[in-house]
Image (cartoon, rainbow, N blue to C red; front, top):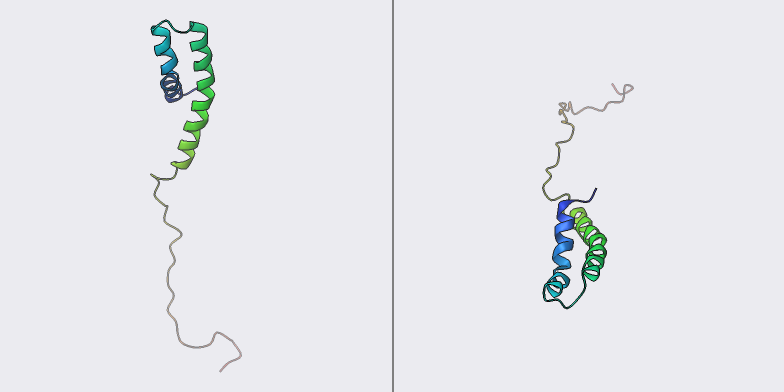
Length: 81
């Protein structure tokens, strides 16, 4: 499914062709072709932007809490008296 932001960005990219259609300089078929070309380009550009900015709002989860144990100052070797 195409996101609405992709369609809006593609419409923005093909706006000069739409303006030239309003001035009756090009045909509607050429405007639609330019819009259809702009849709995958807009999808790739916005996907790259989403990938780059995907981790900016996240906070790190705390790790496993560690309980400190008291140190007796002796060796743990059972053979030592």
